[in-house]
Length: 73
Ligand code: FES
Image (cartoon, rainbow, N blue to C red; front, side, top):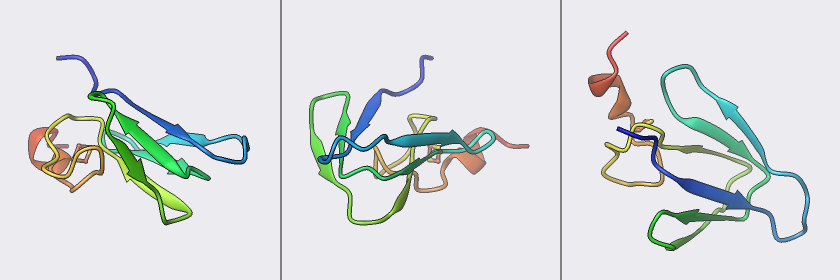
């Protein structure tokens, strides 16, 4: 299975930071918009958001902690 695809952008052109969070989500800072695999645009209203990397979230592209069940430590 390939990793789910999403892209994060800032409207100002400021760099968007993405930090891997172990086997969990990607922590994204300074994003204003996230675009998912189908081209859906998701507004970001927080300074840091957790984006799903396991493709099992029921709230994709947001992490809903399902990765804890599908990627047990
Ligand atoms: S990474 Fe957390 S639900 Fe997919």
